[in-house]
Length: 101
Ligand SMILES: [Zn+2]
Image 1 (cartoon, rainbow, N blue to C red):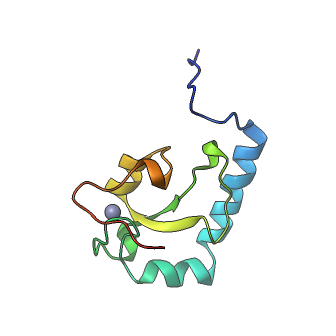
Image 2: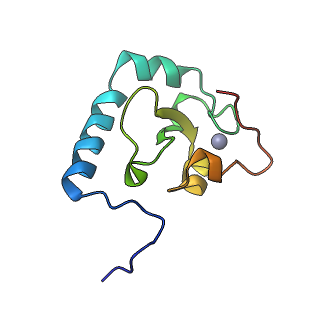
């Protein structure tokens, strides 16, 4: 039993699965590998190396975001974990800086 979370947009399971499948595909793309190879977190600008970066949806899927090149960014694990289901406007890394784009 899960309690309703009022700020979450209801996203059905098939939509979540489809977006996650798209994310897996995008992670294999040259576009993503090139983005990740810079080794820097989009949010806090930490230099964690390509292996330390995860794919983050700026607007989370569960909030209605899509897996598109405009909505995914490389993020370090601490930022990804801390951000969770927040929108970029609701969250900024502690002591970090947000990017202008
Ligand atoms: Zn970070």
